Structure formats: structure tokens, C-alpha cells
Figure (cartoon, rainbow, N blue to C red):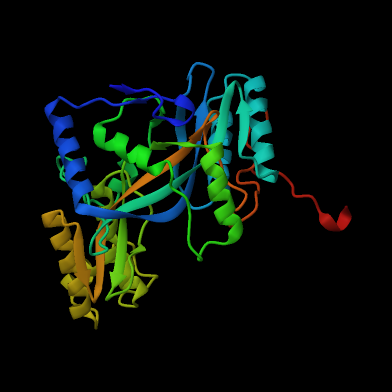
Length: 369
């Protein structure tokens, strides 16, 4: 079903009613969540990089996951992406020079868009938000969210897990289910408001409604959120592609990171020392407290729990969504009011057009210059 004129400037919204059993179950889950959750909480912007080639039409492809906290972090990731392509994939000195020219710009300029070898690269900006219920609780994973058949809890499993946004194609013309279509239409008018936002941030938010009037919804991602007592929920991790990846991060935090942060295990202890091994060896004066961490991690693993409380802090696996504002020329880039945490700089050793890395490149002596 096409709703002509439903989009800004007459862009159509294509709605496809799911008929396959799995799709129908996912849609039913989404309807239940829409009824159960009464509001949205907007966390703020995240940044990544998307590309568009001559054959992509209106589609863009994510090449740097849209999970970075400021534009410069996304630019740095693009810097590394192009440097390694120059090092490992370039088929000629000419290709390598083109890639290295882009790297040189990214080392010295806050570049939000450039074209390299016929491909456009753009730093893109997304709003991260989550649904909350009438009690102010953040939505947890849904029953139909993807989960591994056999969960891998081993310490190195994260290295083999899919990255957030891996292979993601951003397509404003893709058919949507009824619930996703309703969410997309309702979020077109999303704008910052309230006294906690500076005036220039509010101004940029309103201006984005005109420059990028449509939105494209990204797949759900998952993170750890935490709170103690009546305090508000705060993020406890970055975004993960699956709920299991977030649970595994939480289990690692419970058994490895938090014991070290609390001084229960020395920071310089061997990497394989955690709450389990200390309890088993019975060599630490805080065995009882460490046992609580170990037990919580065991319960998390055994039950695929989405919430657990340890020493007065509740940790929950939250379900996050992101939206990209979209204009006639594609996804929105960074706004003037977005803040960078650091300046551009060189991230890798010099690489010449023949693919040779110069690890021992001499540094210019400022005293002699």
C-alpha cells in the first residue's frame, strides 16, 4: 500500500503488511510494545559514516557504525578505514594516492563529506532514543529480537560478534510494516525542547526539520543501562548489535571490571583473574562481596536475564532505537552545535603510494626549523 503524498514534498511511504509467520510475530511484538510504552526518551546524537556510489540511487550504506559520541570520532574511524584500504586494498599507486589524499585532509580538517574514487563518504548524525513505560522504565529486548541459538559467553566471543550496523543499507524508499511506518511518521516532527538545551542547539534542531524533513529508522541496538535507588537510568555501555552481546558485556563487567573498580581485585592482577577465580581460590579478604558478583553473572548467563541487581545498583539490558533525519540529498550530517571532544590528527604512520609503511619516519626538529 502506497500512501502518496504522506512524505515531505510528496515522498511516498510504502507500507507492507507482513504475512510470513516470523514477520507477523515481529509485528505483533511491535504492536504490543507500542501499547505498553507511553513515551520516548531521547538520549542525544550519535555519529557514523555512510557511503553512496553512482549506482546506489537514494540508498546509502553504513561503513562506520553510527555509535560514536561525537563527529570527530566518526571522522577518525573514516581516517582509519581509508588508510587501511590504501595499505591493503589499493590496486595501483593512483588509487593509493587518492585514498591517502583523503586521509591527509582528515588528519588536518574537520571534513564531514568527501568523494574518493567515485564514492561519497559522509559523516552522518542519528538521534538515539528508547521507549519508556508509564513507570519510567526503559524498554528491554523483545521476544522476537534476534538471539544466538547457543549463547557464547567466552571472553573472546565479542571479537567474533557482528558489529552494530554491519552491512546496513539506508533506504528511504524501503517498504515498512504498519508499526514502523507509524513510528516513522510520528518522529518526523521530533525536535529538541526545554530549558536544558542551549539556544543554538534548539535553533539547529528546528532548522533540521526544514533541511531534512523525513526520517529513516535504523535497526534496534542494545546497551546496558544502570540506576541506583530513585536515580534516573544512565548508560553503562555502548550500543551492541544483539541483546546477548550486551549481556556478555554486563557479565564481564560484573566479574572482571567492577571488582577492579571497587578495589576487590588489584588492577595489575593477571587478566584471567576475576570474581569466579578469586572465590574459588579463597585468597581475597572480600570473598563474600566477590561471591555476589560471581553469582549475579551466573544467574545472568543461566537465565538470559534482562535485569539484575548487585550491591544496590540495577543493571538492565535496554533496547535502543536510532533515527537519521533525511533530506533531498540524503542523511543529515553533523550540526554546527554538535561538540567535538578533540581535534583532527594523524592516526597512522606515513604510507607511500607504493604501499610501504614508514614506521621510522623522522620527526621534524622544531628547534632547527
